[in-house]
Image (cartoon, rainbow, N blue to C red; front, side, top):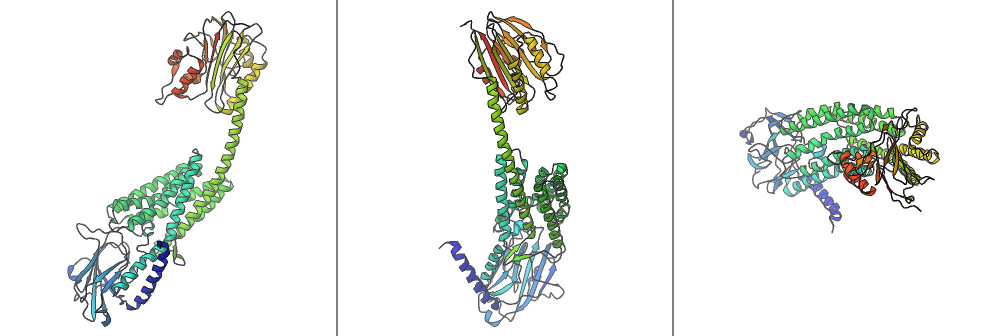
Length: 628
């Protein structure tokens, strides 16, 4: 039979056992307490009439921040029918180390006093009383207790439910006492299940956030939200693991790490809010830094066993809510529906946290029970806020994906149009061998080239580069190529002059570099250059006069240089020269000059392997002398 099938049966049996056993328990309601440590206080004949009356030993002292050595004593009547039975003393969970004496005899302890007091996290326990120890009508119990500066009251530690029920010590038949203590632990676990469920919901929300971030890496708020959810959910499960361990010390470094993680959660949430509220980013980052400092201070106080971590955390609960209020104001200023919704929910959640923390400090904690389940209203507010944020971010993600898909379709269409305008698949004109390679850094680019076989058998070549990248540069390229298609003037200098007049004032503050060359069948080449990289011949740069780029000044003039080309002439864009490797080194002019003797595809491949950062264009022209 599976565990989930038998668990309800065991609980019912436990409840039945406890119901019967309650009538057999001895009342241990009258307790006295005294600070200090003296072995004589364990004796049954010790006079404790001068001690302070108190309630039974609890997880926390009635007196605020009471620490150190304390002894508790009680005197009770022993029913005759219990004297011959195997008895046990049942205690609720309370900090930290203690030892129990019945009639002056030690019957058990929790933790150890040497070499320094240390113990696991508190839990319900039953201590058997040796037969015959209680012979008279009156019995005496003394508890020697040492309490340090632990922080077991934090939710991350209490979520396991091992010490949810403070109760009056029970003395009665051993079987009944042990059953009742185990039932109390089970009830504590059941009672705290909403807190565990809250942590699971936070982890689930964190997983969704990481998935969104994996798709849209530019949206850092998805990453920060995921980390915030982890900072909320993980400490609870670490705390459950530590608090239910029978060997792990309550002030071990693992415990300090859990407290540090739990206190750091608001700081991570401030980083997330900073991503949502760019107007107050620096202020919210300051809140995150303050939260980290408080977390470190609380962890240090706990490690040093100073007891100051409690006031440190209390100060934290009042100072840090100011930063979410700043985030609320920032969200409301955004004025879109999603930000307004998040702002309102965050405001309500912050008010709920302040109210709950204030009630706890005034010793009037806000308790909400639904059936047997304990509900921390702060968790309710946190879960509502996180899932409202998730809904808003998902809607934004969906809209962003739709815009991105539309933009990608537009870029793909622009790329196809650009390829059509460039005519990359055209055959070489008669008498010339032309090879062109164009590799944009993005979907579309700002480089361009054009070749045209003229009526006299000469070949006109134009290679250029529009400043900038992306769609804007591609649109300007399309305008330039359209102008070249209808340009009737074929002399290089005049053609550049006409293009300059056409684009001046229409480049949006940018410019266009261009190199225009006219190849004649006899090997003569006439070149005019407007700020572009000079062409290369036989591995050396052709010395041409370099004029202003197009679009800068309407009255620019362009001159022509004539050379004799017996071999291949190579035209390049600056994307080849400016290729940068992982070490930050540019390909540079010297390395590029050595490459220019190679075919166009090899030059482009070499630049890409080096590290492409800009559009790469390589065009080579070789006279073949073959005329049809």
